[in-house]
Image 1: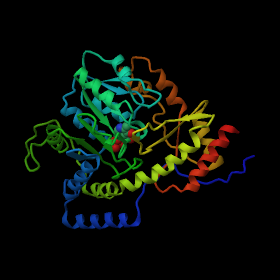
Image 2: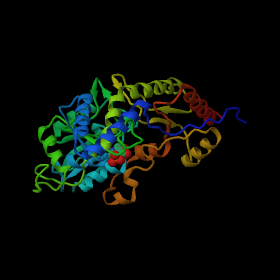
Image 3: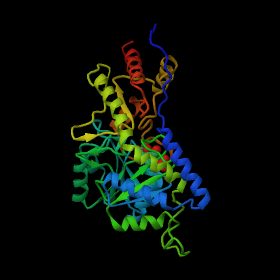
Image 4: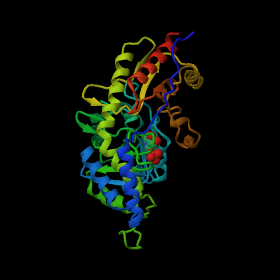
Length: 377
Ligand SMILES: Cc1ncc(COP(=O)(O)O)c(C=O)c1O
């Protein structure tokens, strides 16, 4: 019988110190008086500070991570073409490709990085391939990212990064989202930073910057006209969301530091363990630990494991990345041709440990003790 105490630990928890809550409340009060509730000064400031953080010339704030993928794809004119997309990603990555009128071509994953590799991309190249959407799964920027960018250049393809998981993650000092023509971020509440709902496009490409601003506002040729030059949509970010995003980007360094302390502790505890493997952060890379991936050598029924783990220890494991690869999703069956052995194996077998900025060392120790007991018995 276990002597471990039961400590309730949630899978994720947003981080808003009291002063941030007060700042957001005061901004909301202000905007309720002015009536400037969308496409205002806070949105602009959020864009400016986000671009400065990742090191791009431009950023365009939008209403979701999903639209921050679809808009650049539309600008890149992908309709009727093929786009290489990892199979182990969230629905929205491939859905944005479909909504922009292109065909997603799924690519298997490198087990070492959970991302695609130049070899895997090469295998899936078609005569109609226009570009690659690279996803920094779990917040890890693959050590092969530069090679992937070079491979794209050699083949005459663009590289786009879905950095929904990777706020603040870097490789050799370069931020996720800045290795290709443009990058996208999500600010969904479970992400490393949030705006409630929201997304950001980052780029050094002036055309993408200018056109993204038109697309997000119904494709209007300018804010005050009623002439529509692009097949845009309502993809605007509201000012209340921008206010939340602003306090979070200003906290991002602190958030990353707190996550890293927990991630480093898990690394020390698990890097030599006999019952499984961790996703290693390579030299020269920093991870934001959006997800802390652990791959047990053996795990027959993950959902019952998660349920009994929570009942016995109080620890909630977080959602996987991903539980079901896209080539197995019913809606993507028209594009599901091919073999994806690594994704089939690893998507079924990994678990994600809870990690969030306000997690205490005592909680992190409880997660480790619980995990060891569950696997050593
Ligand atoms: C890899 C990836 N891409 C895109 C998205 C879509 O972001 P949003 O939910 O903000 O639209 C998510 C969100 O979960 C994601 O994890």
